[in-house]
Length: 234
Image (cartoon, rainbow, N blue to C red; front, side, top):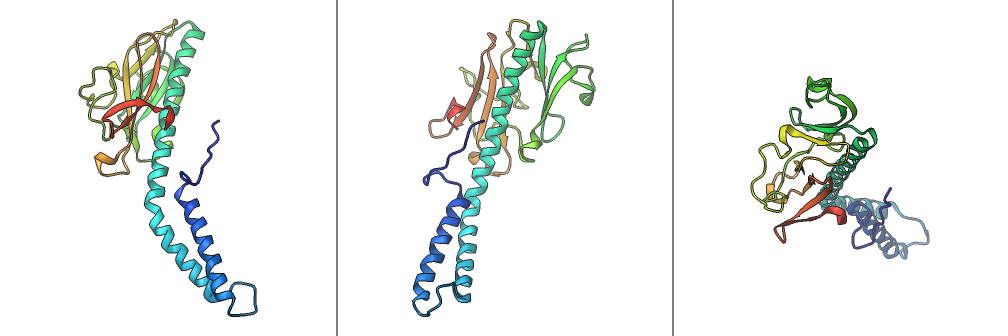
């Protein structure tokens, strides 16, 4: 598990806010404390510190919410990447086809790792009305009620050729990614976004996809360069 280390330049807004409020309280105490013999905080000093803390929290809240939303979306994309790898390894180990069935019939969406199609093609487990054997279920709502399939502010899909996005932001045929016993698979991408940010141009976007040789990708949209890049750096 990666350890999160926050330096001053990148620390979360709440940490920075508390540090600023603490400093203000100490400065207030030094200013007023010289007026009396008591070395403790007076009621007036405490009230001033609390008022300043409230102001700073209000100022920092939008930035903190944006940081938290991005972190949740990033976690959802990383877990999807890991589950795709798990499906590939499962197919190789079992010497049989395994699949991920993506379901956008519910909001937020979900997906299922399945190890058998029941002999009639991949149509999902009983929760989707099919008879596939379910290995794992992943619900996007577990990260946030605002995280769902979507391409946010990206202007072209994550394939080498670019172009338009699929209507449901899942480019796999019939919404199914299938690995065979050699780890080979069909090609495609799945796009994730966070709906909390109402302005489309401000939404972060991640894409997880595969090539026919079984290579798995995780990409992030970078608006500054109007392009997709490796998502491992954030």
